[in-house]
Image (cartoon, rainbow, N blue to C red; front, side, top):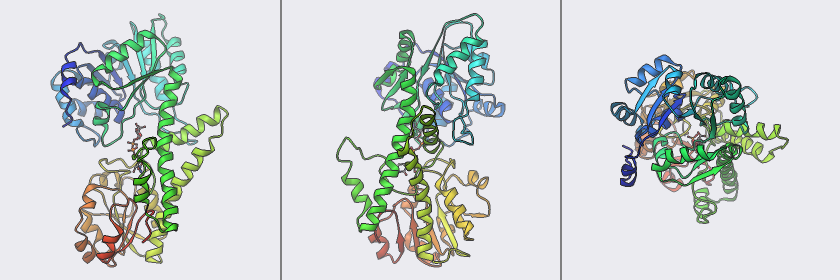
Length: 447
Ligand code: UGA
């Protein structure tokens, strides 16, 4: 259960705001539930009737620790409701968050047609002053476009403000991240909007950074690109460590003692995936290109990330020789632990590369198998890690789920055809694996 500190509980007694959230995806739903928990009256709007019906019953369509109880508690308390009727949301709130998805177009640019449609509907519906908040990750200058669209469609010239309030939550710890943010970024165009948004977030007691709207929009893309860059950087260092006989885990402990660098996002592996980092990186490269800047550094970040997937497959080849007809067991399918999200998961590309070389694939993930079934075909999905290891020529670890770290490795070894583990997330110690009699390959550690 995600608990509020005593201080936050006291502050909860303040008069809540009336808020609506349009779009009940990961960001919209978590934001809505958390704002309700802080004492605001929140209406979540989505045009998917089935989704809204199940949310009203307290059923959560995504796997996100702590979210279900938060939603149920706030529905019971009368602070959170769900509707398909955008008018109901707009007319009963002062602050309207746009949290609809912005899927990538074939060229990587974000498709903003849902944002435009919502802006138009809000403008046609609103009867009094509203703050319209960009919550979805959008390219810089989207705020200007929303403002223009609202002005064009709001015939009575009702006053409104646009705020850019980018989200920094991570899947798998989204509720915690929202309740304990490192910072809240508010890109505002008026003092009134700044005051109301500060009041909304006051119970969180987090640092608030106030900027113009364009700067706030760039902060989001620049932050995610920086995180992606850190991962590709450490993966490059890992490759050097391997060649030089060094150990990336020790190197990654030594660099971040310098607090200007920090320890997070220095875990080498098969590269980043998910719905955000790869998409935002690609979109940011496109945005900067349009603005007249060739962001070569970020292009290389993307390239290194692709190469990490290929590197993993070449490591499998190094230990099994011919991949053709070998049975390869995959442990971990989700793009990271504590989620069933498979979007841009490294497992997809890696399994497809192995299948191209005619490997037989067995796979297990604690929660992502139902989602994986829709994406990866001709895979034997297994009930657990031991079932996966049974009869395998090699085991490949692609997600660092806690349960994999606690495996009975002696049992795994007995079940496998050959004792080979290729660890794409560095969850085991090479020395220990050697003692147990495994041929063990990991990332950035010489074996
Ligand atoms: C990311 C950002 O971390 C959030 O701050 C941001 O709000 C979010 O995108 C978003 O834009 O909505 P998320 O996609 O949930 O969050 O996942 P991360 O925890 O950032 O992990 C991304 C990928 O990087 C995963 O595949 C993970 O395995 C990989 N990773 C992470 C590494 O390979 N090494 C690391 O050291 C850390």
